[in-house]
Image 1 (cartoon, rainbow, N blue to C red):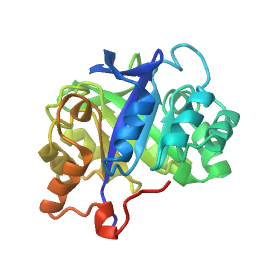
Image 2: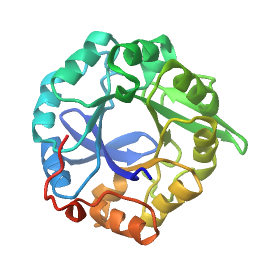
Image 3: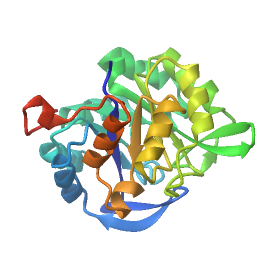
Length: 263
C-alpha cells in the first residue's frame, strides 16, 4: 500500500513566508530557508513552495531563490507561482525542483498541462485547484491566487486536468484556508472519486484528526498543511505518529534505519 504523505505548504510573498485566512496572506511567518532547514529535521515527505504574488505581478519564478531552496531541501520539492512557459519549467527542474505546480496557466491554457506532461512526464505536473463554495451543492474554481472566478466546477476541471496528463492535484478550499477548522470533506471526496490520480487535500487542517478525516472521508491520497505547522506546536512527525496509530500507512525514516531523507 502506498504511504500517505504529509506535505507542509510554504507561501512566499515579498521576500518572506506569509500566511493568513481565505487567501488573504498578510501575516509574516519567517524566512523560507530557515523553514526548509526545520522541515529537514522533521521527517517531512515533501514540500510545496508557492510564490503567491508572481502571477499577480506578471513575473517569472525566482529561479535563483529556488536554487537556494533546493540546495537546502532534502525531500522532494514542488514549486509553483509565475510558471507560464516550458522554459520556466525547464529552468525550475534544472535548479532543483522535483515537480511544478500550475494554477492560472492551467485554467487559461489547459493545453499547457499536456505540453508539460508530454515533455517532462506526468509525475512532474501538479495542478493546483483553488475553489470557493457557491452554495450548498456547488463549488467554483478560482484562478489568479483566488481572485478570478472561472465558471468551472472542481470536479469538471479535475477530470480535464487528468485527461491532459496531470500527475496529481492540489485541491485547496479558499473558504477553509487558514481557518484550522478542518478540510472541506464534501468537495474533496467528490473530486477524489471523480479522478484516478492522487488528490492532495489542502485548506483547513488544524489538528491530526482533520488529516485522518481527509484521508478516510475525503478519500485524499495526501494531506497538505500550513497554518497548523506555523501557528501550533504540532509537527509533521507527530502527525505521522498519529496517523500510524489510526492504521494509516506513513513513512517514518527511523524505522527504515536511516537518519536522512533524500530527494
